[in-house]
Length: 296
Image 1 (cartoon, helix red, strand yellow):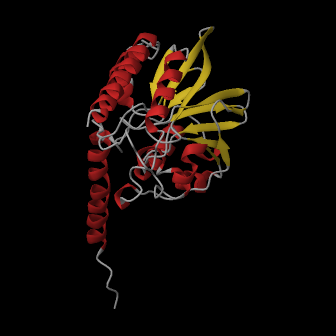
Image 2 (spheres, rainbow, N blue to C red):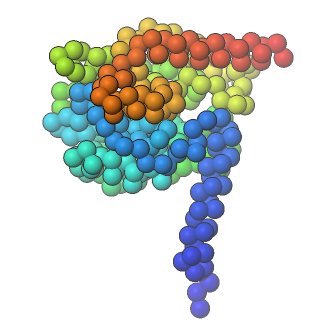
Image 3 (cartoon, one colour):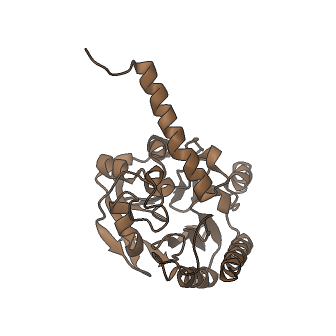
């Protein structure tokens, strides 16, 4: 006789497991938008060949080229069907994803990668500082490597990226900027899009945040963390930016700007001043955290 629970019990167990996985991670990451994770959001064209296919807060981007699709971020495992549905609603084929990229190796941005790679046969390109974390399923993360609640499905990396590397497909070029600190391989992506005859500089911020519990001073497992943050901010401050996007919708006010976009303001995401303000605010938060730890 089988000892397996009845289907209804299995559903309950799956739901409970999901909550256990997500809730502690939310506390650790300090994300304000966690209630929006896994909640569908309308896919839409941002500009040129760049589309939004993420959920209400976990951002995922699609770049369409004549040679196939590039996807940035796979999000949590539960987002994979949402991402697939969003891509298909836009008129593209999920199976046409050729390259998968991420902003950084935390489960809320890369836990779905293994499933997407398996379903599409895409190639996985990851910044060198995050490769071991991705391939270990989070077990080598400098902050969360000893916390099973932060683990995610392992995925094999096909190309190791380095700071400044281009990623090219079908005439489209993205540039990977290593803006480490949040993770050792946090990546800010830049590309140029053409809209109404105008060239727009697009910046997709990886993450400049100092998470609760991060040790910025005398960190034995990541001695260069403060130096990496400083370098990352120096890079972010010099990037030309017309269109401000990021790994979380909360970074760039996704929902408020999308409301304007729906009303016909299709330049809503053109926000160079918002980018400058956001980076400066995040830099001050980093400086404050560093100063407090240096005084201890």
